[in-house]
Image (tube, rainbow, N blue to C red; front, side, top):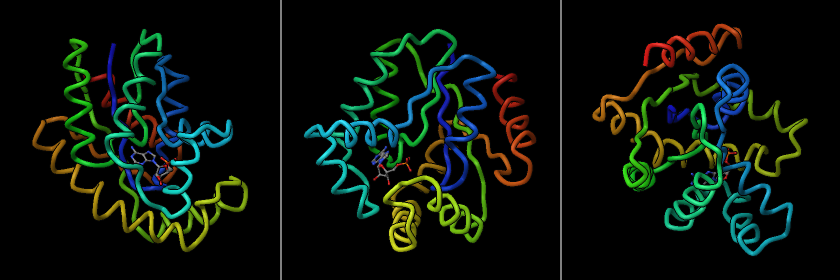
Length: 189
Ligand code: AMP
């Protein structure tokens, strides 16, 4: 049972690479973005709150996000392991994740960081916007999301480095090559 954080900027390929890892290892996958989009689609109160932040490219407040994460985690079968995709995005979220897993007698076993140059991220997100149907994949919101990433999420790289959990991988090139690099880290855990 392994708990893996997949980390990177918006457009770094976290979702795509998580899907490949899920197929290979049989992990459960928590994408907090997908959870929130599901709430929006179902028209829940939580969805309405989330939409007001997502449409502006801002983060959902930590307290709310931490509760959502814990509820999602507890509902999973958790056999082979869990991939956390899009969470944590702030240092308080990383601390909360550590605490939540410790309370369940487990821990994060690795943080896998996908490194992609900034100009590639913008190009990927604009291209994704043509087919994703995601309201936040437009040029203005993309710029805001990258700004939020740099200010609030990037500090987690140093945080996970200090925890001894950070593994950085080149996040561009062939999908299979990127996935092989991620699998090599997981297999060595
Ligand atoms: P994603 O699909 O991971 O790109 O997430 C889309 C949007 O959902 C983000 O831009 C945030 O507004 C919101 N979101 C997803 N995960 C989190 C999180 N861990 N903390 C705060 N907001 C989040």
